[in-house]
Image (cartoon, rainbow, N blue to C red; front, side, top):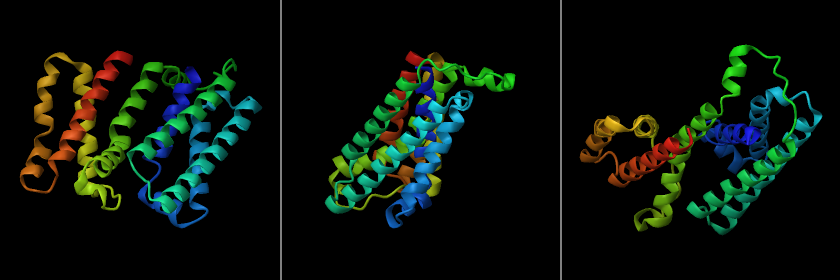
Length: 236
């Protein structure tokens, strides 16, 4: 699981915060856009496997992972364009396939001896499974959730079903991300900290009253953050 956790964290970093709106648009409009995204996936994966880069097997499998991710994303673009099925289920299926490929790569890299002749501060961070797992949960609860909320609304809410997929404006996007970081942390800490969640959502409640934010967005955002906070309690 050691390599698996680090490849999963690399995947979520490269597939969400590193996949900016501009790169996503290039994936749709330019043939080389999906290749650029695939290279970002591969480069990020190599960084997170830095102690294992002394093994040629690591390089070959990450290259295969990069190629597989690139072809999968290209297939998804073609499918969504031709059949107009870009919804919550295709989003979830796509992520599960990515994770399945990561499992195969991690399984084949299992047993490799890492090169730990790296700075002590790097080793202390890199070998801390709890820190890596926490990073995965925070990424799922922030950037991934932003996209998931848009897909949930488009798939399950009639009001958004016929509308094109769109991300929230910059300000609302990062307000939601900051609120979810706070909620996840408070739930993880548990006890008295649960009460503070009410204070965290005050800005979004105010925006809902002013009509600048949909109540459904606030409800989904808060619910997902609370669930992830409890999952962190169980795993970190």
